[in-house]
Length: 257
Image (cartoon, rainbow, N blue to C red; front, side):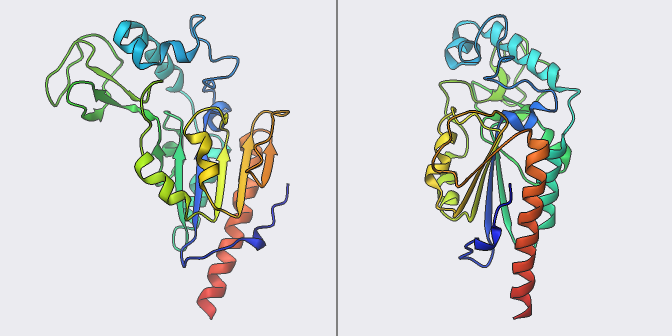
């Protein structure tokens, strides 16, 4: 699909592009989607095991579940979609701000070279102490009696720094205000079923709002101006390249005035 970025409305000297990414971005790298057909774990839905209630009532199962997910992600590598986001961020950094908020807890964006990624739901690389609320780099896998390096709490206190069902995502205190300033909003590989992220498209006033969906036949969200289906590694790079060309052209014109 060709998108006419020529009609892009830029009100500030530095335009702002907002990218929201989800599980579909990393699916081609071998990380199962949380809600897809491979999302079940021991015949349990993620909402049953990755919840604040489960952490209180059966922490050993929650730890086993996340240890399984961490182990599955260890050998996964970034795909062309991750790389295209990183390259886009680097290419336009002198004249455009790019805010990339991901729902993913893997570090494939960072491995691809992205200079800035905000993890809405936390990440596999860090741990959280449920007692003192501090975060710190993860050491090994999760087990009972891992000790918090800050307050010394043990038992099941050192947990994955991931947002469980029933907990509040990170960044909600600033994301909405950023969405008001966006000129292009992209949703990449998200299910559109996880809130509040599914409502981000409602909060933005961007003239161009693109949804990249890995699944065909889904009901379209009318708030998107463009709907593109197919593997993100194929659909996203050409669109980011076209946007980069438009932004760089605008920047050159502005410099020559």
